[in-house]
Image (cartoon, rainbow, N blue to C red; front, top):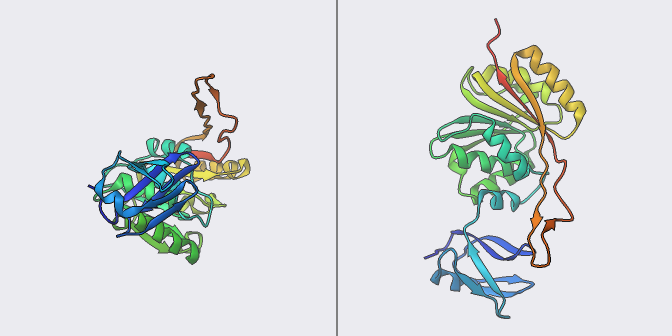
Length: 258
């Protein structure tokens, strides 16, 4: 049975879905009607619950993508379509130690922390205190605060706190990523991966050249596009709107230059 502090996704449709941490009691006001939350404690994931208007919601177990997309945002976030490729093409595993530069709203921090747990750590650097505080709240809401260490620190000016050759992957989301490539090379383990997320081609060009000079190989750039297919009795076709350009993803592997 569900209990207070469980995280649930109350789903009616794509236009009516609510990610909530269950309180001891209370009501959830929706445009489909009122849900009495204490009634959820008699149910399990997968069960349905009705509003006072008789509209049915399903109680779903939230995915990491659900949690990421529902964070309180103070910045743009990394979309699931990009995050999935970033996870597969870098060295991320339970117990890994990874560095994130540019915490933002903490959406990608949540994804990283989920995949390095139970014993891994995400070292997340952010230069703005207001962003960092919001990200900490989002990560705590996801129940992953024990796997993240936050730093209020300007890496461009002050560098990383991690030791040489100690980090499994570095994820960079900065306007000028080339400024931290040398430091990233220092803390990365030999042969391990770095990724830079960049919205503009000009950023990619300068970062690419810097990586070659500092000591990286297998430098590749991707753009991921996503288009949902609508399955209907009247006919199946692509959705009118799709998620096209969000960022260019630049991947590279550290080499030990002599």
